[in-house]
Length: 99
Ligand SMILES: [Zn+2]
Ligand SMILES: [Zn+2]
Image (cartoon, rainbow, N blue to C red; front, side, top):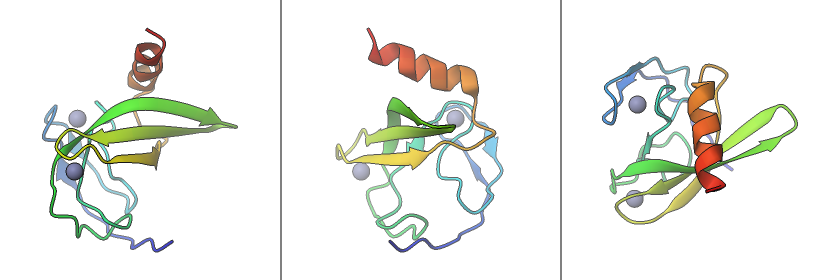
């Protein structure tokens, strides 16, 4: 899999949080929403641009994976959670899955 390191900061269009990019950041650390901009992680070549909702979280060892679903085209994609992601938000997404 190709992973292009693309360090950039961005402002979350969902909650307005200023996300500081570390090169791998592809979702907001506060609300966990992402944006459908990649074909391969980090390439920013996807023209969809839809907002991606966090629909689920799985835990493997110490690592959390957030599943994002594009609200525009329905594309689903797993993303590794970052260490500075809001843990209460992760818990909330997990809780919503058990409703
Ligand atoms: Zn946000
Ligand atoms: Zn999309």
